[in-house]
Image (cartoon, rainbow, N blue to C red; front, side, top):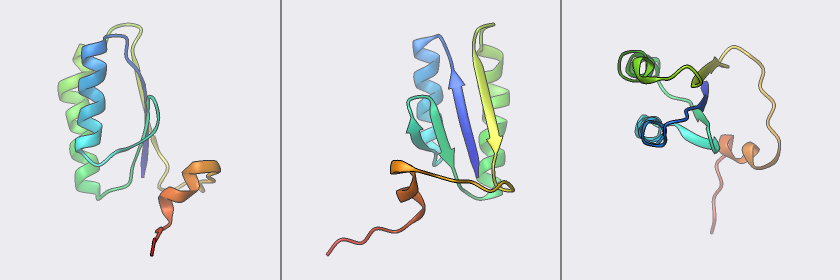
Length: 90
């Protein structure tokens, strides 16, 4: 699983980046924080897109941080705990 956090000043670029993350299966956790839990192939493709398409467009004040949390013990609280459990309504 990856957690991707970003701070991009250009509105148009930020919107395109957000839509690209969603298109590749990322789930918005907070305004500029996404979680993606997918196959290694999808994650590798996502990182390639970030590096080849977006990285060269980032300005000096922009930042994108990708946390690989697949090997780290993760604790979730509040609404975040519901993302890992199935909820069935009858």
